[in-house]
Length: 162
Figure 1 (tube, rainbow, N blue to C red):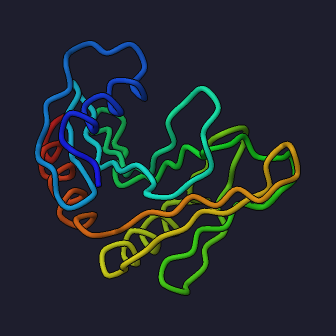
Figure 2: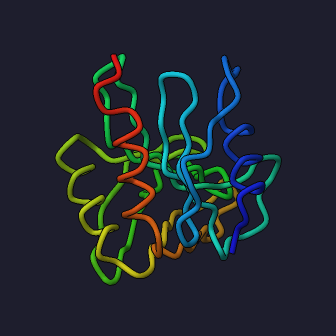
């Protein structure tokens, strides 16, 4: 399980040039919530994944009020995906196909984002699978304990900010 400072390090590492230091909104189970300028995120690292190559894998749900973007899933895979390989997200037996490129994957559209996040709110475990550029299976596992609370904290922190 991650501790607060690990989340802070992860959030700083994933953020593009940070305008301000991320503000922790709380650690909830294996998920954390942060606000960074005009962006808010719920984020977690996998509890089980192949060793990453030069980056730290994560799953996040982000909000960008200035772009009217909210509740967008972003997965940073532990390994770069092979071109043409599907990326599947499994939450307690329910599967979703994600779009992906390189080391990232995301929901196909806002409706898929909503369905995935609804499943995350009630789910226990989440796994993301694809084939790596080396042809080997990439499977990153996440615990969802605290995900709903972290997603709510991030949404509330950015609500009304434009």
